[in-house]
Length: 187
Image (cartoon, rainbow, N blue to C red; front, top):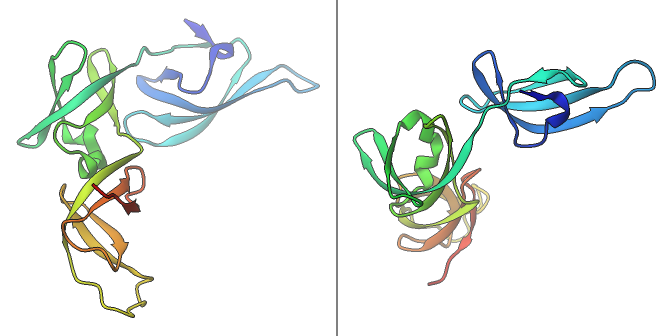
């Protein structure tokens, strides 16, 4: 069992049967009273964030989370199938765990999956991916009522906003965290 002095960014702590990942921490030594650790934690499953304070030296229960590289193979009904790149075992992941990452995943794309006791907790995609626009309306010259952007559907089925001059068949770079258009990609 660890103590609050061992807390660092990325540490996963088990509280009331739930897993929380430390996103920020600060060791505080006030002039009066005992030292403590102030943390900001994110629930690994739900994404909810909370602030929690621990007294210095308080016992905490850490969880062993294994982040491994996988390759996305295909969608099987509602579930997603991935292959572990180290031993080639296949892992079926539910759509709840995959979440919005499905909007940016193409077959044979590498992702990181965090596992706790063999159960997938969440996916980590690369910061950006290259996707092809499959459908978009033609942009009208001089139309600035939408800020110079228009909706476009990419090959995964997700809808993003792109500049007016882009047409179907063009490959674009998309931020996987926000879904924002980052630029055009030339082959």
